[in-house]
Image (cartoon, rainbow, N blue to C red):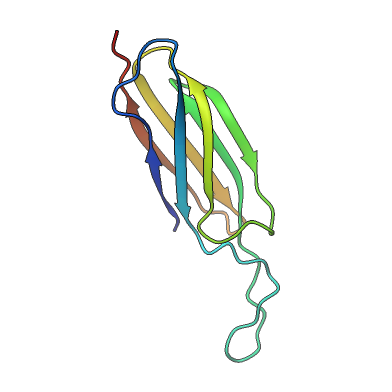
Length: 107
């Protein structure tokens, strides 16, 4: 199953816009390659990524076969309050996962 690395700044001021960096380990098979014996490797890509900040959706992406293995995404959100940032994704094989990081907002 895929796993992710989520990077956010250590301390954030209220109302500050900050960058979230996300790297997900996943092979992102397009369905166009063959294995050593010539059998087609079935398509298995991450098709949906959702990010929630304190249970409010702040980012969503739909991915397609043209995305490389181990996709990297970067986006910006505004700090409202300390809490959690939950990133969830699912793939064509029906697998899904969620990673959580803590956001610390300090005056």
